[in-house]
Image 1 (tube, rainbow, N blue to C red):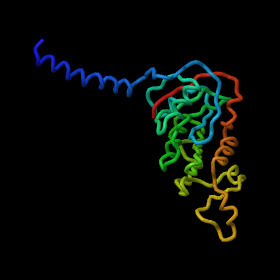
Image 2 (cartoon, one colour):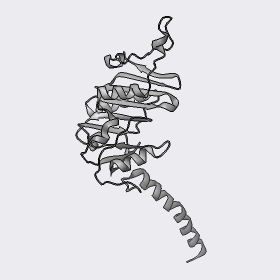
Image 3 (spheres, helix red, strand yellow):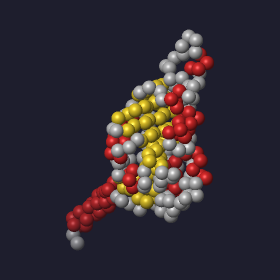
Length: 229
């Protein structure tokens, strides 16, 4: 082999191998290290995270309505390790059904575009989709309710700033006696001090869907789906 042919082959290898790896990563489906598809029991969650909740018969049914790629079967233990174990991760774990509810963990709900994204998923599924999230460190509290391709109610506050506020507070929200005002009224300082927080989010998730913090008590095993946003 001539020196020129050797150099050409070496150069193609340097370019081709990384390109193939990137292509496989992007196109999938892949068998990713650390992903176990052995059926296991549900795990509770609800704090320092963001998620969707939708009534569905399977994880695949919900995955089909999400804008995700490279889906692979994944159990609860592996799914939690992937989506909660990496800062800024872009993977979502779509759980198997629990009492008729499928949850999409690590779905972002903290920017102005979030309500519209939830509404698109609701339109594809043809049913109501709820979104929730909280993080005590940045005083984040957010929830979204969408159906028929429209946002029925959406609220998000973080770092003392209102991110979005769509629709009127629901009876369930009003029953919690928290303030949705930007500043206190002259005769309502006490109520204004009661802002939405992580406890508010769990209370609404429980009222509208299913309390995610109690999933550890469920004994039914299953397998969900891990995918990339």
